[in-house]
Length: 314
Image (tube, rainbow, N blue to C red; front, side):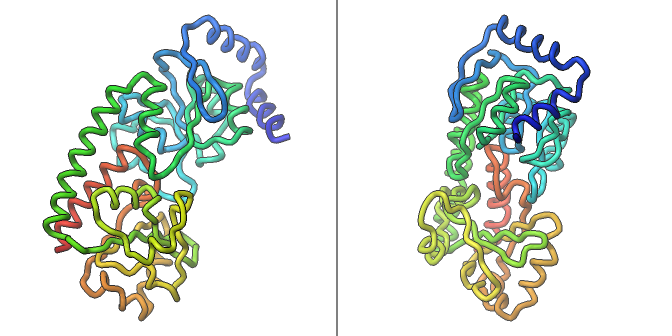
């Protein structure tokens, strides 16, 4: 029923949608294309797609890093949008609304030649693939580098992706050297605050930011590692009463838009004052638009923050 309703919605945008759909299929069949295998099947996509739609900002930033500007993308449901931080690099990218519920009418109007997104459901894939060739990859937060390489392989940008990752690794090595010389034995905790949610959380070594922290060889608190059982557990919820679970020498506070009130509630608690990072004034507030999910641009933005704030930490 969901598929039927969605397809009707898409086709209802046009009085002559049947002819448009048939024309698009004829053009696709006649053009040279390559077969891309992905978790939901195979898609024949243009060798050089020109009108790519990214169904989430994580795939959007990977495309931008590969010098492939998507024509449209959807914004995160809760976390902040990375687009304002990208400045001119993201100028002109059309908004499709919120991630998970993109505007289907707008997608059809934009006439894409490739739709790309992470972790689509089978139902979503069937809907989008009726509009344009659609490719989806599983998104594992700690495996973001593999995700970049898969997108690069799909779009013919493998060499560019490899250069980006080489530069990233050089930065990691530089930061790792600094950490080993100046912060030996120090621990870092990453806590996210939501708007309207009464709890906070810590991000594990299997999360996007946690994997970066681990890569530069800054340990997370041991109690956090003990509570993390597998790679499908990027976060653990933390109540005010168990605020000790985020205790560390250095604390990064990731704020969603509108989360200041919830964060203030924790700050007003006497339990908060017992945290080591509070006592030593090693608490740093960062942006959820790139600290929660992301790819190569977000990873480099987090490294920027680490270079800035860890230099103050010794």
